[in-house]
Image 1 (cartoon, rainbow, N blue to C red):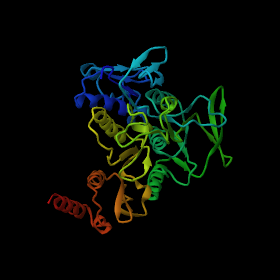
Image 2: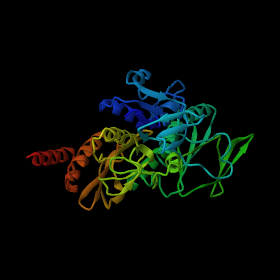
Image 3: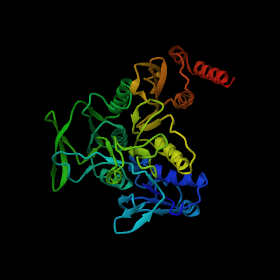
Image 4: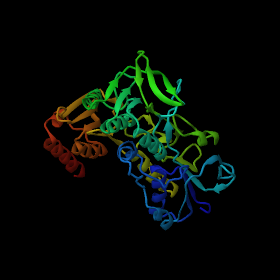
Length: 413
């Protein structure tokens, strides 16, 4: 391929795609385009260690020499205006062009925009980039009252971090429970209890009607109940939307993201899509999904590299996720959407327990709080298609490990 591969998006997915192309033996040109001026960095720490430590620096995904040593043409701070399918090139803002034989869209997602009066005020912030994290960190140094709008992972991670730093924090969630679309009710209730025990105020089935300000900066959030919450900072965590604009103007098929097949090819076979922006039929669940996780991004990147090199395969990785909220390490494996029964093991009072989800007789997901061994064994079990009987799960870790080992031995035989 004379013009090589161009990758749009220099996050976890894009960087792994570039690395995997070289690891798989691809010797042609590789261009990695990112719209941020920073070297590509890890995003999960931004809502935790980065915003609480004034001296913290972004954690690079790869050292700068990695790109030069592997002949990866990294172009930070570069904006793509459109994809010219007929000319097989990217048109950049400013007039330059990058030709390609194959392209990988790793365009990610962005925070959903808050649309209410006062949303434009200073101090109303979302978190997606290191620049956002720097603003939150700088403002929090002089902030006493924080309102977090949205009870999802990012919002709760920030809420716990800022409360640990001494701020008065209120979480406002429109649904009836925290993390309502992500975890079981038992996990939601536990997370709420632990946060409230540290002094975080949690309001569910509540919305913000408007934001008030003075001198261009937010001063208060007015709730649907009429209550006025003082706020010198409002964190907006109401979900994300996939960045599909380039794909849309190029005429690629969209469906809650960029629609791709099992090999991650879009409706234009020379263009692949991976990570937060890619929607695909997941073999594990049999449903169409668009997953927002580092694991999904990097696993898809590895397959995309193999697809470009002609090593056909289907994306079948078992999804797993994690979140650190205060003193809770949440780890999730599988997709619990089709769950119709659960088994809980461990001790909630000790802040260590797991929820096993079943769809009929099939184990489909495990959610753990401070039980990393359950999570790691769960990844192995789901990857092998092993579904232990619920009584085996409640019998304890040793019984579960023995049953899994016996199933593996039987399968090998």
